[in-house]
Image (cartoon, rainbow, N blue to C red; front, side, top):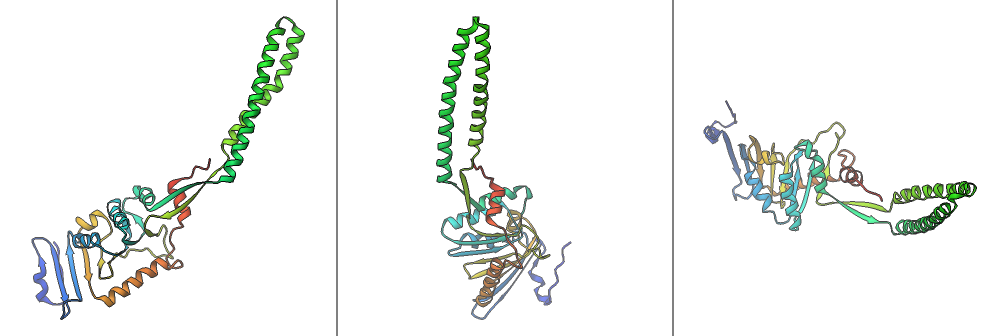
Length: 280
């Protein structure tokens, strides 16, 4: 059984027993500065529509995120919308690497100097191997000719030992040359994000804040996940008071820029961890 208590008893009519939800709105005289409170399922439908209709900017702080909602942000970014998101852990821990791979772009580069050095060494090794092959063929032919001369056969057999030792060295040399690193990697963010991959001074970021185009903001319990927006029983507060929205924008930007109280990820370390690097 769900019970909601409000200070003004006349507002109890806003509790819908059939749908188990609650709605309350406070408006200014000019109806420009509103505060709307909604409790129930499908809390995120209006929020979803406003995010997808953004024209300039979307700022999000949510402890959890899933792939479904992440694609919405990537699509907005591809349309030229300024998107920022700060989160702690993906909703599904098993999808953590998948989400981070989507957020981090890995760029592979060739070190031209090391590449040319490696190429020259491989060519030199190949030429030595070719000469060794010719020498080996000559030794085999001479050994066949000397088959009926035991003394000569033993002599050529002994002479062939350095050849096989040298051949083995060339093979190992090629293997080591093939493992010479010639690639290096750089990383960049697909969209601007801050990933709290560990507790920040005993602080776990559990706030849910959504700001769209600096004209409307949502606060409450809605995680940036499909279930949070559609099926979970959640609470959200929608405000359009411009002064307070500007204050919220500053607050969110401070979290993004504060690297002492809110440590974020290191893009190179995180990118290497989720993408991996082949160096040769």
